[in-house]
Length: 393
Image (tube, rainbow, N blue to C red; front, top):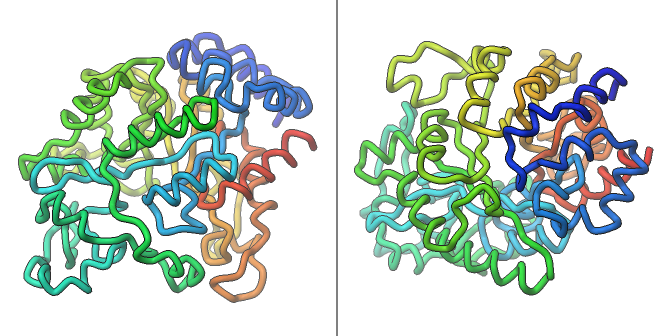
């Protein structure tokens, strides 16, 4: 990190004020520390959520993407708990989609043919449908066509078995959790571990579900209020790819909020539906980031918005997004770091085996050096070790 950027981040009182005292009030100070000092801060308890929650977490923060999904089928209590065991600071516990009877459950997508054993249940064969999901024709089984009781008869399976055949060992072990079960699990893990456990749920396809009469924001806000986790000090960060969904949540709860950002040429689906011509490239301009900062505290950009790749898949020069977002008062938690070759930049691949690990530590180091505040990773143990290397370099 350059000296100028370090000074900006350490002294950005106005920027950090937007995050609220419980979110990153001390984060600016942590960001400005030397690697040795930051590591010492983590060792003395700030890195375990012990001093005011998220503001005491080490920077960069390691976020277990759908749990420890590099080792267990994603969005299962087994994956979530393993992420904590591996040292994740936050667990992305919940891509939230509704059931027919209005319960929020944790699945990567509403289509569950690729993440459950639903295809093995003859009683549900007639539920298979082809639907238009955010403009994409999608065939399979959808959560909104099942009651919660029916979904509870299914079991989770590995989503990418070609890359993670070892994860298929755990197929069928865990059921689909509801978000309310996750909130109870969070409390249980907090008591068991003696530190506050943080979660980072995502609202999936909110415009699609709102048109079906299954608005997810109100359901989420109701659950958070019921469990006393709807304030600025609550250990729950809410994210969505649809900016208007985050704007709606900003009016419903006080939680820290983040807007997810896909490729530069993409358009959020709520923009498509409302005729807003802006693309992600417009949202990551200084003006676009300033607007996001008026209702959210962070962004979750794809890693390609931090460092683009060339036509061969190799990293090029970093963009100004980290600097621009920090100047706007936003933290950055980009996604997603994975250890396997196909998911790494070409610079860090080793061999051609899709199941083999590449130089993940080198990739982590390169992204950390841009000044990001944290990263989503399927491999929290690798992320934690990579951070140790980085802050003590």
